[in-house]
Length: 253
Image 1 (tube, rainbow, N blue to C red):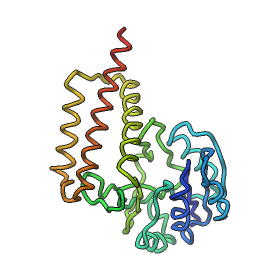
Image 2 (image 1 turned 45 degrees about the vertical axis):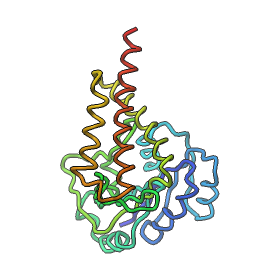
Image 3 (image 1 turned 90 degrees about the vertical axis):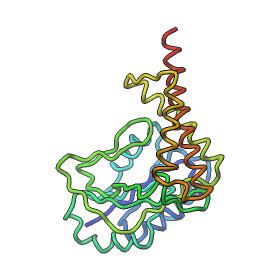
């Protein structure tokens, strides 16, 4: 069973080498679709001997679907540039390789590293992801944010031991910046499907988000990192619904 490792990138010089190295020996080819990075990402990819292509970025889902079409082999192992296979997950993939056709796709848990700390609560773990799949039956959704892998209802999904390591944020400031961007994209998506927001919606939604992640999902067990994660996640929710309200007000004028 031949596997194509597929990655999309934009200014991922600090992450891409680790990601590529983790795929070596598991994937029979590695395909990188780069969105015209301005850092050294393309140079690193060329040094690593991957098949490198470039295309302007429009959305995560569309870019991942383009990258999948560049792959040569029937199975795709899709990783983000800030992810890497753990040793145990590599072993599980190699063990299952001869029996890939037992299932149509495979899921595994993702473990996130936040500012140097591994996060096991806050709603961030086990964060199960389907990332190994038959290319002929799957595609990514094209929503503006948080793309999903779409599989037919009859698809059989197996589970592999080991974790996909996710190196998410290197600083709290970086988390703030991405939260603002996700809030903006999320507000756009809500507006496109006709969602409404009352004056009390932003604060209520943010409070519920914080209670869910910090209290009920035990984010407090992740210490100071858990506090910042849950606080910024709640702020992102507040910003998203506040932006939605502002957009709706502009439309009424």
